[in-house]
Length: 112
Image (cartoon, rainbow, N blue to C red; front, side, top):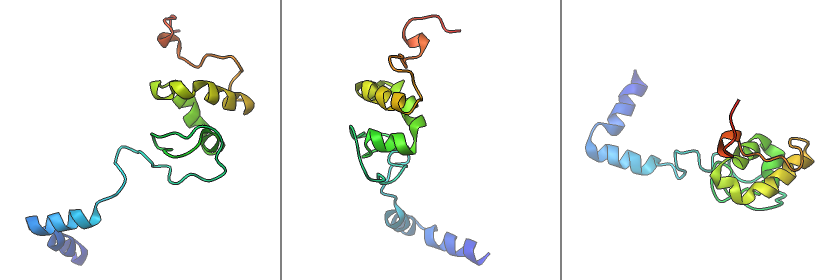
């Protein structure tokens, strides 16, 4: 009960609430951007300027989170990196070279 009272005391007035929010504001957005943290090192390839792996190279992402590359290859944001992503995934045995990762419904093909 002491903790609850202390927490309430910290935010019970508009001035205290504003001070608390100012002092405890997070520097990262709440949309997941940068959620993977700092790049692990040994970069190779293009650096991604968006998403949870912001600032990571595609090679770093491939080593740590190849599933993200599979997802990114199908997204409009990943279009400019698609050839590089396909090359990385092919070398990892996760994609056959020359396979179009675009889902059938985006290519105008019937979806089954």
